[in-house]
Image (tube, rainbow, N blue to C red; front, side, top):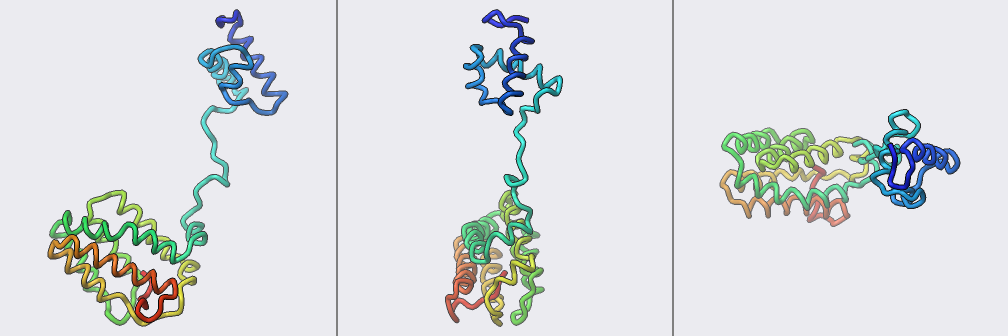
Length: 218
């Protein structure tokens, strides 16, 4: 097979092989094509030939360990409770609004059932997660549910929870009651505002906002 410059693909492949051996790695495809005096279409034929014989690594981009997204446990130690609640505050009020609009009767009953299992005086992390997850399910937004599940997994991390301020007896139960009632009554704006009030209070507490903001971590 001959290129427009009179070179065979095999000859071009040999030139590429020499550049790879002497320089350690190949330059960008555009630069290499200019260097060899061929167009990129022809160059790719030579590169495919070399990759087929395992003389060059696959053109598939490899992601180094330092480039990979950290595991959930790693993320938990890279962030802070305040950062986590900032993200939740940007997501969950809208999720609550959608739940009030889209939630089925059974899904809304699941939200109320989770709240009914909670105690006004004793905070239970797993019940709290169940409550917020039920709202995300009722939103009928698969991406929102996935994001909430990832965030909730971070909140389970013992090291992450150790970063919370001193314990407070406030459980946030009354806020959950407001959210559940608004969703049950299909009051979308009230559900959104109740969730925003709830998460804002927690964020204020996490940032040292004083007695008015003293509610426990979700």
